[in-house]
Length: 556
Image 1 (tube, one colour):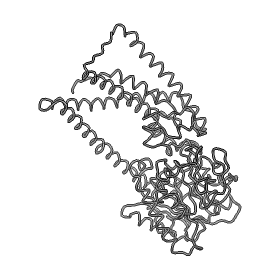
Image 2: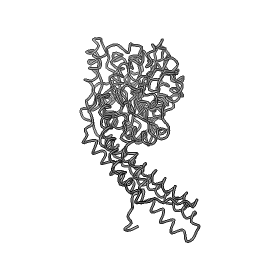
Image 3: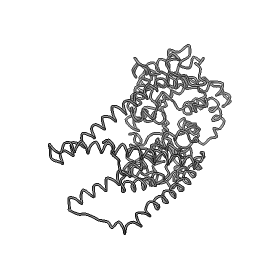
Image 4: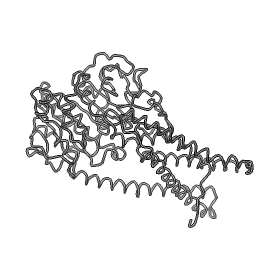
């Protein structure tokens, strides 16, 4: 292969151009330069492959049928000379149109508008990514071709071609799995362990015996992990709650156990239960079991909301099950959050069964994103959840989870996928905003809300909720309905492209203002108020301000 030069395929270049126009169409989140680069690069590569493969297939069919198409170069010259300029012009218009769309999305989310220079850097980066991916692909194709040519003298040409292609595909898959994927996962795991051991800014061991990690605790501060230390260090104390509500309060209990080598999930859950016994957590009015995301992170707005709304007469129980960041765990390990949620809930339920019914606290459950995925799978379905807990709030629940898929397809006719009405809202209510708990998106006032109450909070613009593998080939209902108030009307589903667009939206979705994307903050207060039997539309601004004061800035 030395000295070999690859001549770009003309049809492939046309396909890449066309897909670049599609890739610049808007999705959920205002794009950074790298999001534009990823979308453009992957889409252009796909277009190039389709165009080149289509041309090769047409030529092969033509040879088999004995058909040869000849084009008069002299007569075709005007068209071939004009085509590049036409495509460049369309690309420029597409870029300007997308720039306006990105400004629109930023306005809908009250976020910073994208700068034209930043967007241009993304387009250039996408071209570089396309060139790199196409070069790698052409190199792999050349290996397969050379291998087939070497085999042709000793076997029939079709067999040689099949063996060459198969051997190259197998070798490529091996390298991607063992060298790229495995090594990357090992590096990420090592980095995650190092991060887990580092203290986050502004965190100190709690002095209250009600907190794990204190001197009175069975769980040493150093074993909780960085995010676990944040959980027990942050949050309100009795004085914070009393100041906000004007009523006497208790210091909320926070029982937490970190994940570490030599201790399995059952032992970790047992450590949480021991902390609840030590602190008197089973004697509080409310026991809140939250499933963490990767690294042991908890939604502080969720925990603090329950603590303020109950006057501190509650206990939080949670545990870490992995060092991996949520994004990595979302791809590489979806089993651990399920096992962790099931194990901890079972251990707590076993303890509650030992107590007479009148001495049992209300059992509430919840989780966000990966925590919601794991937490909901601890139940066999809605009926099982209703029968075992006294309320729940699940935020940012991915649509491909069993719990979501068991409910939303059976929504009331006329209600959209982003805010479905299930069984007239008798037990479970989906919400894009607190008002959706009282009146559904079609304007119909809900009737009585029976206990236990379950809230599924999902923003119309949350890519973590709406991403799924099926986006590659099937148009989802949310794309047909266009019901989201913070989603651009210009958003159009496109096979392959939308899958990557929404995937690249996910990391950035936690950086947008609250109430949009994957940012569930102040609204959690109203969701938990509803679950606790309080009016979700009451003005909770004083409590919201107090929660903000108790959250360390880089953890909010």
